[in-house]
Length: 286
Image 1 (cartoon, one colour):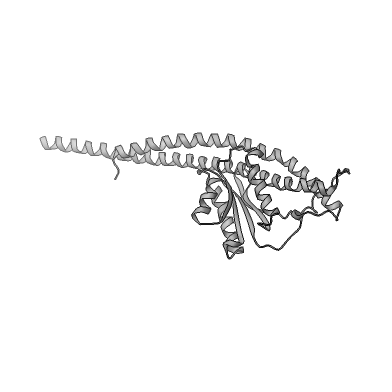
Image 2 (tube, rainbow, N blue to C red):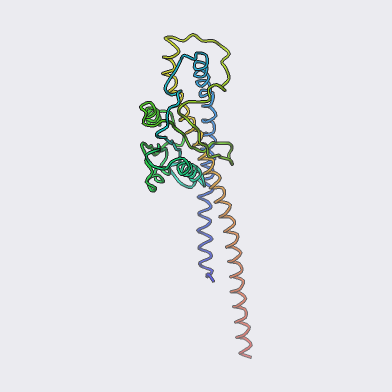
């Protein structure tokens, strides 16, 4: 049985841990609120650019672009969004499990796919398992700007344009609420599902031509989807961190209560033993 000193030391250590996890919970909650605002604030821009692209693509059947056309799939790209740090519960494992399950289900050789990684945890995972990584970015800010990931977004889109990959999927955690984040995989390229988007209520005149504008807008639209998914993933990351730290704080509180009970019982047993020894000694002197 542990001594009173050992139990007391564990109580003090657990109290310090509780203070740390409680502070981290508050920090994550603050970051989550701002990240959620960033993600929701970006939606109108994303919807508007999709509206314009849909209008051009649907109003003129003669307009074409490689990013809208399906081709034989020889190689698939997977863009995954993970965190750079731990202490985020199952946030990273959900994304990485979805990636691994998809690879095992769809591919027989590493020549059939490549991975583009955002976040150190995803990069370390791919490196340990020797998965082919064509590009990566580490150390993404908690509240990233588009300029922070512009280079990797453009290079990823360029890989499709250069036919290094024939389709691109993005895997990330979709933010639903502070307690719910859903691992999600979306097809990014070729761009699909434009027919189902709501039609524009106004007619626009395009200069120099719809096809020229589409050449500019489509890469920007694809890049906006990547950035939007990153903002969504960051909100999920902070929410997962907040939940993990709250659970850790609750567990620390329960452990403190259990250890305190054990300490009191051990202390009571020690006092009882001392009283018994005193009584026995007094009786021996009689």
